[in-house]
Length: 235
Image 1 (spheres, rainbow, N blue to C red):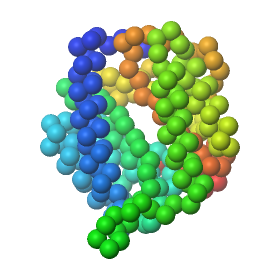
Image 2: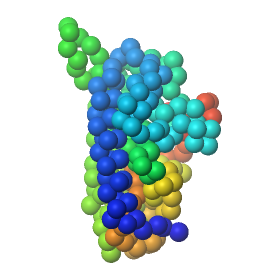
Image 3: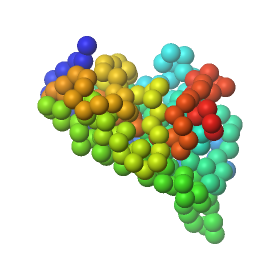
């Protein structure tokens, strides 16, 4: 069942979302060549706790960290480790917080930065990888435009798929977005592919996460060796 949040609940979730966005902005500054994903997790957890919030992911279905750090062929949910980021990588930072009993959830994919002559410059990712990041971000914006009362969740799914495929990429079909509130994952599941006019109708008061996941190769995925993450089968 899709829950309808009250104006008061949405106000609380908006507060949490602003706090999470601020934390993510600070966390992005730490992404650079030479840092481990475990260190990024330490920074993320410190920022969450100092904000007065709690980590949504830590302990959820046994997940051992506050932050998800997925690199290159990894799609989502990879556990932070001693793996060192290097120039040319891309990394997805996925973080959730609990604020006044409500969850917020946010992810961003960005190129790894590298220090040079006392400055920080953009990582030298290859053109196809750069396009992949840009297309996925635009797919999110296109999906958001369809997220309005009276439309259907299938309208969002269709728009994301149509754009990603028009740019010669594939959407990941075995993972999806979701509703959110007092629980981290609520109804509905929001696919990144579908048909217009299908699925539940979007109503005022619904709160949900759009999560476009786009692959440069095909859409087949597999579990990562850490037991939590997912990655593309073809690398």
